[in-house]
Each structure stands twice: as C-alpha cells, then as structure tokens.
Image (cartoon, rainbow, N blue to C red; front, side, top):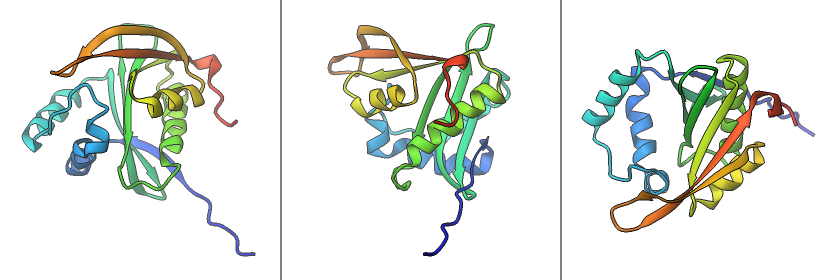
Length: 173
C-alpha cells in the first residue's frame, strides 16, 4: 500500500501578490451570496480596502495554504482591548473537499497561539446553514440571534452570532 504524502497546512500574511486571487475568490457567486456586501467588487475597490487595512495592527489579513497552494482567505479584526476579535473567511471556490475545515482549524490555531486572542466571534446569515454548521463543528457556541439585522436590498435576514473562547478551543480533536 503506497504511503500518502503528509499535508502541510499554514497560515501566512496576505501580500499584494494575493490581491487578484483573493478578489476572484470573493467575487465568485458561491462566496458572494453569503456576504453582507453582495455586489461584485472591482479591483480598484479591493486595492483601496487592502491599502487601508494593511497598516492597522488590529486587522490581520491571512492566506490559508496547503502544500504551498493558496486555498483560502481569513481575517481577524481585533475589537477593543482584551484579545477579542471578529473573524471572516472563505475557501477558494475550487478548493478540494475538506479544505474549509482545514482552513478553520489552521486559522483558529493561529488566532489563539500566534495572535494570543481570548475570544473569536463569528456571524452567519441565518440562511447560510453551511456556515452555521461549520462554526458549530469547530466548537463555537451560538450566542445570539439578531432578528432582521441585515437588509440585502430586497429583504431582511436574521444574523446568528457565535463565540469561541481560547480555553474552549480543541486544536487536535
């Protein structure tokens, strides 16, 4: 029986060279429909966001890679003091099955071990059942249901809020 090659996963800072790839992922219809901002983002708009965000030490723009192949984007936005942060993420639309879970695990390992966060908070639009299940599978607790919190231009949607504390994180289950 042939031995399988071990998968090497890592989180690294996003750089200028990642801009077009991350924009293509973000603008993919499967990603865009689950975002608060659902319009197709222009390269100019994307570059302005990156340039505005990059120098802020409380915002962490990260790329998830497996075997040096970029497969997803993660950001942590520290809010206030005390190691509290909101997160956002998406896997590349063409990433192999299971990459999203690997992205989540690697990102949370990074958040708690490297960024020294106390708590990571997430939100999911209530119709995004995959994101809700994803958060729950990583150990997040549902902390709230914001009724009619997001208006997409046509209708209102509930937003489900999640939280995961550092001491609750299980890095190797």
